Length: 464
Ligand code: SF4
Image 1 (cartoon, rainbow, N blue to C red):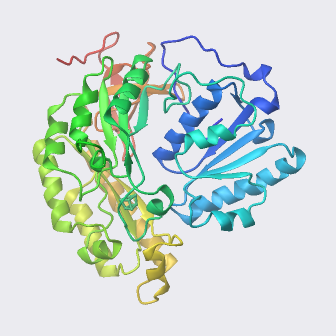
Image 2: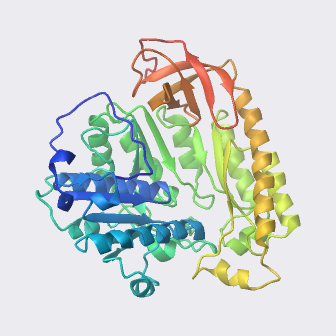
Image 3: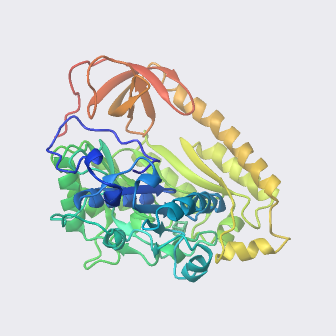
């Protein structure tokens, strides 16, 4: 099983023809361990569903499985270290059960490093590039059945979760100095519109209520397809899927976001007013060194356009602190920009040099490198500022009523998200799974909200 995930079940129950885990032997059990971003999670879920479709069942522990897949991440050194630590553990299993097949999958595997890893990791039987689900599936040694339908990006496609991420594009054509993804995931490849629409329809028909379209630069989707369709065309094509309540997309890029896309999101009722627009740094000198392709002025203009079109929008961003060349003064510009734009949420990372990237070379220049202590001090400073901002933003919701799509239960409470993707908890005796609740907020914090249901027994949303 994938031990990073807790998947919620929807109440619609369709026949489940998978083998019972208790009746399968070790030779037909798999174990998947996933590190990294939502794209990896989605790839692992698709693989998991495919393995179940050919007769495998999940193992609780790696030593109960004959087929072990580690879906890896190399965005930061710490993610790679976790995978290497896990492989050390698996070496013992491989000694005890020599027939175990171990696959290293994902962003740690690329054309630039496969031969190095082959020499360094003798316990690994196969190395597979990111997102190549079919290639991993073909390595499973003991399939019983053949798949008779395309696999969905959910762990169990007879009972999908309420909210599902659907990859619409793989790879990236940008060359951000700090980023290893283009080296590992390759050039951008958009999935055809019809294929995505079909997949969304099949997931929603099985009970999912919210779809997030996923890509490294989701706004650039379609530019490599015949007729060059735009993301706004895709949003329109999936928007009216019967049963779909909410539509999101992730991750945007300031150099690719257009007024057409902003207007489409503002106009379509199922498109949620939440945009993740990574700024990465608050000074042009750092953005230039990062090769991001926009200026702080352009970023401000985009935020102004988004907020003019959707005054209630929740804006989130990503920031890297301590990139080579980021002086204290430049970092203070980042703090000032955050104070000015007041994001709902920031994913903050301290710069981590990745071999093969331009920024890793820049970090070798001691006049540009930022010390580890300074990187972590800047990260903490930014985190503290963001905590104050999120506290204030969320406090405005106190006593307000928000619409919550319920995704599951957590410690005896219902757990769901608002249109702005804010986490809400409430208690109520009814079954709210997969339903919309009107919740009056009674308690706020920078990270989540708590409240009371005011519409027991009925869903309030009505779309034309
Ligand atoms: S846009 Fe930049 S940061 Fe994002 S995946 Fe592409 S290269 Fe990496």
